[in-house]
Image 1: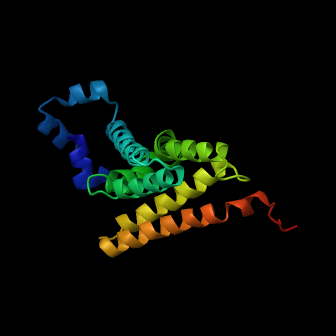
Image 2: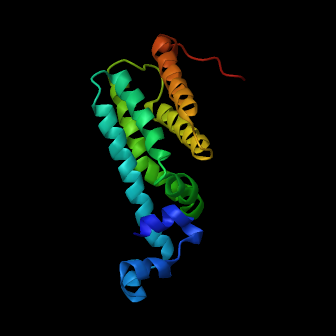
Image 3: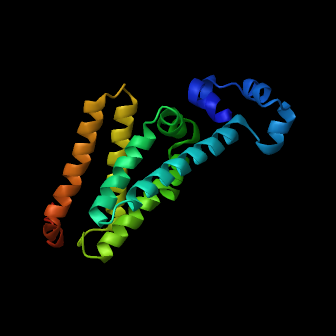
Length: 190
């Protein structure tokens, strides 16, 4: 029920007193388990991060081919992140209330870990030679987070979602098509 309050009212608007009343417990009972409203929110945020990661993993594992697994995982992340019951907690209040470092650590523990593991597997199999799987995971994660923020900041229609998924597909297909070029060292400015 704390999650419902944070979803509906946001962190700032959610009243710990309302949560206590709805749960039919005393304020002392809540403070016995959580030192503060912020700690309660952290638990809710982590549960949301886990849910998103579970959706990503389920979507990716439904495909047999590694590139399709990567695409489906990326797609699932964006769709899960912008769901009405998650977007405020995950994308707005999460980084704002917990701070960027805590939010990123949670992201790395859940969704980004899955992304990095998929890219490491693809690298081991020769699908993405010549680049760091960790660097690519951070790059892709940033793009997916920004796409999610963009979609969450508006009322996305089917065209917005389709366009976002097409961009993800185009980007991944571009890497797939030009992966041999990744073996050639890039010219670095002096």
